[in-house]
Length: 80
Image 1 (cartoon, helix red, strand yellow):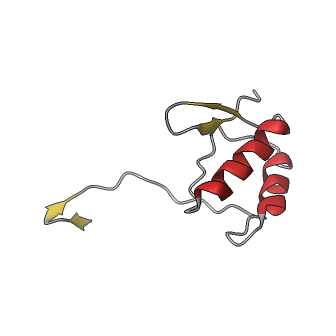
Image 2: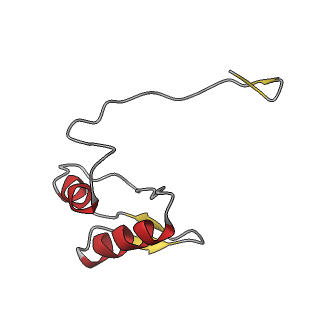
Image 3: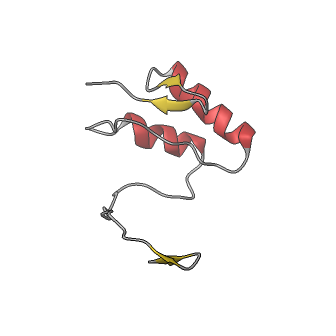
């Protein structure tokens, strides 16, 4: 891949996530997380609107689905 006139090697893989919709509302996103059989190590909240990120963060925190740490308050799931 070329970026700013520099050739970069991409070391990534693509995976398909079933049952997820990028257009889901907060309730749908919470349901998606709580019903996962295998919880991810972390979840990155990237919604453009800060109040939406904060609301989802608080909902996951109340449900015990995430603990928050770090400067950007990224939720860290620790369910193993």
